[in-house]
Structures are given as C-alpha cells and as structure tokens.
Image (cartoon, rainbow over all chains, first blue to last red; front, side, top):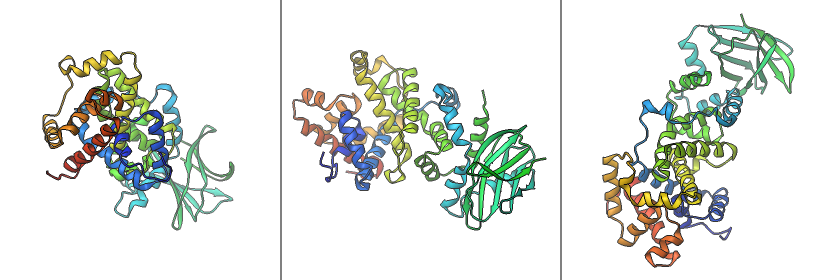
Length: 197
Length: 191
C-alpha cells in the first residue's frame, strides 16, 4: 500500500475482516496518521454494527454472569491501579461543558460529608470526604499536579494526581478504604497532610 | 460476587455518563471507561463472536481477549474514528474470524455455518428484516460476495474461487456493498 495514497476500498475490507494480517497492519498504520481514512474505516464499522444488531445479545440480567470478569490473568489489578488515579473522572466529565455533572458536587449532594485542612509546606488545600469514607475530594488553591495518597495505619494508597482547573486543582477519588490521613506529595516528597477523623 | 470495583462502577453508572464521554475516556485509555465499555458493549460483542465461533466459552474468551489486547495496545481507538460500539463490535467480529480461520476446527465450524439449523442463534426478527431489506437492494454480485465473505467468513481468495471471479472484483464488490448497506442501514436512505 502506497504510504501517501488513501486506503480506498481497503477501509471496508478491513472492517469486514477479510484482509490478511499484513494488509490489516498496513491499514492500521495508515489510519493512525490519516484522519480521512480513519473516518472511512469508522463509517464501515458502523455498517458492521448495523449488520450485527441482528444477533441478540445476552439479556441485561444475564450480562453479569455472561461476561468473563477482568480478574482473570491479572488484568483487574492493572486496571484498578489506574482506576485509583481517579483523576480521569474529572478529566473526562468536566471538559465536555457546563451541563455535564460534576461528580464531586453530586457526591456531596448525595451524602454526608466532612472536611479537613491540609497543613504543611504546600499551598492552601482541603480534603472533603464522605462520612462513610466512600469518596475523597481534594481541592488545592492554585494550579498544581500533586500526587495524592490516602494512608491507613501507615499504609499508603495512591489515589491519583490533582488536575488543574482554572483557579484550583482537584482530585475526586472514590474509595472504600477508611483512610486516617491524606497526603499531598510532589515527586514523592511529602508537602502537606490532613488528618481524617 | 460484588467487588469494591463493582460498587465503584455502579456509582459512576448512576451518573448516566454520555456515550461521547465514555468514548473519550476509552480513547484516553481510562480504566473505568474500559470497564464501563466492557459492561455496556461486551454482550453485543459476545453475540457477534458467538455467531462466528458457535461456542459460548470461545466467544466469551474472544471478547475478553479483545479488551485485553486493546488495553495493552495504546492508541487503537480515537473519537475521530466514530462510534466506540461500532469499533468494539468490529474488533470482536474480526478477532472471532481470525480465530476461526486459524482453528483446526475450521472445517467443522464452516460446515456448521453452512447449516444454520445445526446451531440455534437467537436473532432479532425486526433487525433481521431490516438487514434483509437492505441486502435485497444490493446487486446480485454484491449480495453473493456479502453472503460468502461477510456471513460465511470466507477469505477473499476463497470467495474468488467460489464465484470464479478475480480477487480484485471481490474486493470492489464487497467494498461497494458495505457502502451501499451503510447508506440504507446507517443513513436511512432508500433505493
């Protein structure tokens, strides 16, 4: 396949699954750098989806037992490690506009919460947390990407990194661990901490 | 068994995450977006794989492996590509086809594909009718190629041999057929 040419009909053939491994790899390499062909492949995939709607998926009730759990092959642990960096939820909810729900706000509306001030060498910061310790919301005055750790009996859990948002930096982290202390760190070095009571 | 992760996901799901936000999270290789996509689209992916593999366990493995592969291989999906569900269902279908073609059971499975009565696959009658109408609008040559390449999972060379036409003609007809099907099934255009 000419690297400079568009993939043409190969877009539909790729989506239909009839290309060889080598041909498919060439298509994938091309669409990684060609938005036009990427869109054409996406359109062909939409057609595949329409053709596959004929197949009845397992019922909603059966879904839980139908799908393999990700605990297999250690995948869950990797996903959970990343999930602990719950900054994603701020990242992929808030930038989509003011009409998107702010999870931290919703969490506060829906539960009883308390707050604690951080003390130490860092900027003014607070942790707002659910009384049942199901979530922690860290807000820092100013733009900082600090690592946030929850500690219980000295055992630290990485909760993620604060994300700058206009005048503040934030991290909303769901957790089932009743931490007794939350720390803000920069490059692994402790900046300030808040006691959770 | 409900895990801590389950309860966390359930909390996110109560916020009715929009599809585009889910796709965006998936494109950024976000862990919970992956989990939510798996739960949302996994059943349809599994149904697609099942139609090809005719084996429930193999279909479950196939879908799981697709997600594992996508998780390990960064940058497979971007929102520019279009629908996340379409991307995932296509991935599942292609993975199942690859597995089928590589399988030593291929001949046996192909025979099953040739004999639908041998395996009962639950189908949506309304969707089936809608697709049948769209396929009926194709030219005879296009419909033959779709039947063999898409529904029976034949390779291009096999289709060419079966219909005694050049591979290039098979490619052209299949591409044109999928574009025609897109016009009727996705865009809602009538002939």
